[in-house]
Amino acid sequence: TLPLYTGGKLSGYEKIAQEREAISQIETTNVTVQKIYQTKKSYYDAALIHSSLIHMKTILANIETLEKTTQGMITEGYAKKVDLLEVQAKKVNAQRLIAQMEANQKLTLHYLSFLLNQSVTEIALPQDETVQSTLTEADVMATNLDMQKASKGLEIRESMIQVANASYLPQVGAFAEASSADDTFLGNFSDHKAYTVGAKLTWNLFSGGADAAGLEKARIEQLKTKTDVELSRKAVALQYDQMKTEITALDLQITTLEQEVELANEIYRNYMGRYREHLVSMSDLLIKHSEQIERILNLQTIKNQRNERIFALEKLSNGAHL
Image (tube, rainbow, N blue to C red):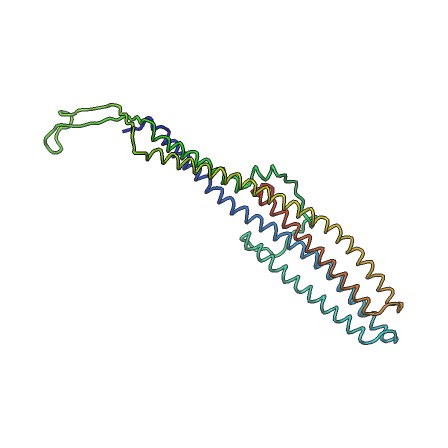
C-alpha cells in the first residue's frame, strides 16, 4: 500500500519533525555561545587584572621610595617614627592587594584552561582594555536564539493546524496484492497466482465533533504561540535597550574616573613634595595616597563591568559578533 494523498497530514508531520530538529540545533548553538561568552569575559578579566597589577606595583614602588625618604627625615630629625610606621602599614596593604590580584589572575587562567580544554599559563594582552560593539537592535533581532526558537515553535503550531485540518479531507492510496490458490505447503505459486492492483479512497464525514475540537485546539495553541513570539520579541528589545543604556552610563563613568585618576596621581605627587618641605603631615599624604589607590581600582572595576555588558549584548545576538 502507498498513500498518494493524505490532505497534507504527512507533509505536516515532516515539517514538524524538521522544526523540532532545528530547535535542537539552536539549543546546541546556545551552549556554544555561552561558552564563547565566558571565554571572552575571562580573557578580558585577566587582562584588566594584569593592568591593575602594573598600577599597584608602581604604587608600591612609590611607597617604598616614601619609606626611604621618611627614614632619612627621621635621621635628620624632621619626621617621627610614627610617620614611618604609617608608611609601612600602607606598604603592607599594597602588598596584600598585589597578592590578591595575582591569586585572582591565576584563578582566571585556570578557568580559561577549563573553558578551552588546554593549559593556559599566560595570555597575549589586548591592545585596548575596553571592547567596542556596533550591534543594532535589528542585528540582535535577526540572530537572537530565543527569537529563533519562538519562530520555530510558531511554525510547528502552524503545521499542527495543517495536520488537524487534514481530518476533513479525503485520503487516497494505491495498493497492489499478490496471492495464490495453491492448497499445498510451498507448492507451485505460479500455477495458481493472482494479482490485484487498485486505488482506495477514504473520507471520514462524521467524527462526532472530534475533528472540529482537534482543529480548534490547534488554532488556539497557534494563537498562544504567536503571542509568545511577540512577547519574546519585546523582551529581547527591552534587554537590548537596558544593556545599551548601561554601557552608555559606564562609558561616562570611565571618562570621569580616568580624569579623577590623573588628578589623584598629580595631587599625590604634589603632596609628596610638600611633605618633604614639611608643609603637610604624613597623615595628609597617606590620605591622598589612599584616594589614589581607590580611584585606580574603581576605574578597573568599571572597565570590567562595561566589558561584561558588551559581551552580554553580543551573547544576546546569538554570539554573531563574539
